[in-house]
Length: 267
Image (cartoon, rainbow, N blue to C red; front, side, top):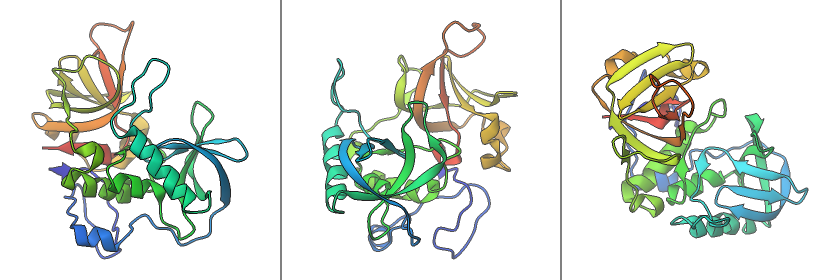
């Protein structure tokens, strides 16, 4: 399994070109927090934890944690997803253990379309809270450019849980492109039948009216990749599937966007 992650020497020991394998032993992970930060960041009081990836500050701002997607809590006709309650409780415990305060590192894109603050969260010791949730299997790793600063270390945290089938990875399965019939956050897999390029970026067509789009502005993260050589290989990805309604029939019905190499696995 090859993870297409941009080149970063996490331990500052070596650098590699192109794709590499994430090999992470339990002892190495337990001894090292790869996303820890040393510099001082602004501290804010927390009013409440909304769910496993969102909280509200005392100044009433909502903060969406960068780099993770936790299972959804129920409400408004929706059922609570497996491990949603555990994720919320764990984030709440991490916040309470830090005297209900967090340090924020804003993303390059600091707000989303809902007006929420986009940030990485740290405790008093500089330990990253998203990393802890991912390493315990209480969220999925997601990268949405341009907020890519911790993509590599968060990918390693997820791999720790995935290899051990912790939390969400205990029963997680990648939906085949043949079986895809709805939108929303999805673990998706399929065989790349064709590769196209246009002003919208690169399109990896999986057949069955499903396509994976690497946007034009995200291509610098994939420097040196020869997408045409991916044809025929099996691709695994994750993200939010959207239905392309009202568009010409020549376009795939279902689209998922991947804006960073760590969101793609080639087999």
